[in-house]
Length: 430
Image 1 (cartoon, rainbow, N blue to C red):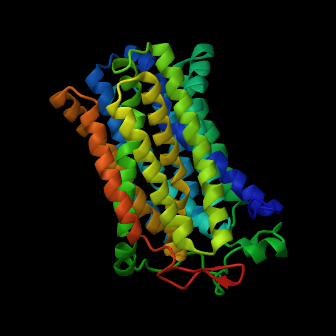
Image 2 (image 1 turned 30 degrees about the vertical axis):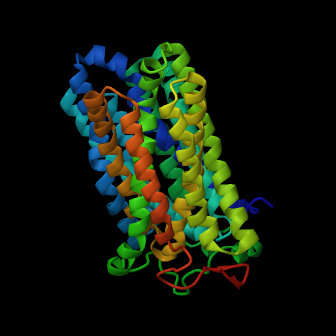
């Protein structure tokens, strides 16, 4: 089988998480889809709209740590229910905003709720997936998020065309509320307590706490932070380049290669679709490598390094050769392999700290969120100073080369708790 979700209970769990990722990213980018209509209706300047966009990121990064800590102490069931209700209420409230202040406020609170979400999901995945299935589970769920981001624009456009921009936010918020209720109703912190789980499913999952505790106790930050620090550095470099594709790639396609809006939008969508496929495939491959070799270093750290070597191999000709075919091919290859590395990165946080996966993933993802705040601004500054698209992307290549070296410091084979196992065999390191 491709991965160990062979029973009804584990399949239902995965379905809930996949749907959550789709909704999460729809709610995250729905403002961009409705921005032009809202800007005109609310009388917002371009600067004001930019301030509203930025509000999300101000809260998103710090609340990674809040969500990870909360999930590790009180469980993913409570944390994600609160998060889901937060997206719901703030999305609905967006339909009632009257100007910049209220729009900024709701986007800030949305960033809090969404910032706490992914670490809490990682905590749930660490309990409900086997070591041999984690990569595929992460790949599927993150691919669903990519799909949600891509689907947001047509969904919002349809709701605006048939109703209004205010109704579009209310409708999406109601969907989020239904998900939060479903999560609270169906999810069990301890898989053993799920009424429909089978003994075959339980045999594939990590051993549960014999005391049946929901939380994992105080987070051992002094042991955890040094072990996750290489992942944080590496994910910062990943996030730096990844956010450039999100924020600047459409402009590059138009200004550097001369594509019109329609053609550049189509090409950009195709690039994002390739990244979605890559995130799924990366999960499958990291699990395959682990089953084949029994070596977490190969399945996680070395796979990340190999992926980024191919990212650099795509970026270098794309930025040095001013040819649309070479550029599109190179940038697509680069974005594909950035996505390909996502699953081994996130599963490494679970390998290093299975009981504290919420906090470990929060540390890593907060570094990526900081990169998301800094890199678009730095790219714009370098572009203004040099007038060249090559220089800012060249800086990204330098960061990725540094990150490739740093992957040798990532040791998923050395858990801060106990050595992980795969099918009853100890997992090898080097």
